Image (cartoon, rainbow, N blue to C red; front, side):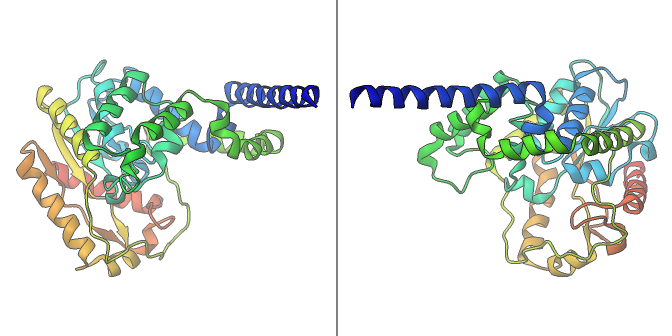
Length: 337
């Protein structure tokens, strides 16, 4: 009986170790298939490269995916580049600006972030920023210290605060690509790797071509119209404390480098605006935006349109090509004023 138990334990141990080696090997060799959606990986890596190298563009746009889609920097001028990162918020925005300033002078900073991400209701920090390793280890450690100050995990502020250090450890394992952190999605990644490489290559070429041709601008939805209502009118907008902390860090950098800073609330479609208009969510968002210039005199909230017609949206949240042209022209006009 003792020998049977020993052999069983050894068998299980070897099985676990072999599984870990297999998963880690696939992650190391083909990260685009096993760290998350391949197109997301290619897009983020392209933007990371833009952020970390000298480009010569002195006016930059940072934001989430709505920032990528809403503004074509070519319409703003020859010195503009769009460094927006899908699913990001002020934390990634701070890292972006800090790194970009290491090699390029910045005159103007335009920020385009959805209010839900500023409220820290985004899953993408753990789905993209952490596995794709946009931040280095020192930046992750700094974030952990900020989390301990505010006593909650970034983008999980409704969770049990008593598990903070454990949650930070789980996230750190994912950052280091610990194999079993990716066990739930491994089979999906393996299926894509085995059967969808040609389709992934085509998708990669499309997104990289657009990002290259338009300096970081890309569309996500390609429909001619979208009338999905994405607003919860009864929701009260509350900015996350950690996001506010990193907005403060952005403004410190801006003050130290004499950068003009503008914030844009990205547009919603008309269907969403019909619910949003004069709602609790509307009033609390407006109160937040109106208070920012009082707190940060260097920051200007651009008076762009809150909504645009449904025909200018390619999906519920992102404008299509026509919407990009419209909103970019509006942004340029506001900046010129």
